[in-house]
Picture 1 (cartoon, rainbow, N blue to C red):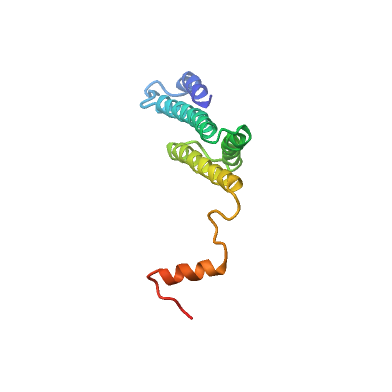
Picture 2: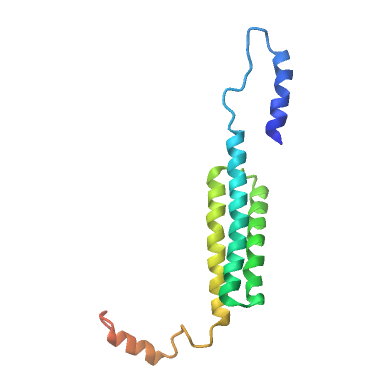
Length: 144
């Protein structure tokens, strides 16, 4: 990685400097960054596994479970592809946003599954008469 290459170049730089100047590493954040990346990787893998398991347990349908199990990894790979294309770096904020976005993808996948599996008419307004009856019952004023 780039941080090990940078550390390997330090002896070369020290030979180029005058003897009165010391070149040392004062603070190395690479270890905490590596740990953060490792934690996010673990969280993403665990989240995908738990989401697929929970969806399968509740829906008990392998084909319906397949949709979120493919949507999650594809969205994560797509996110990294766009970040690489736009030359973004992985800082703590983008790692946190990636972890949160998995929840949004899961929610969207579940909503799509529910819409696909719900019988027609459930959750929809059946006709204009239904809207009129709801408007009469509501406390809001109706307009002619």
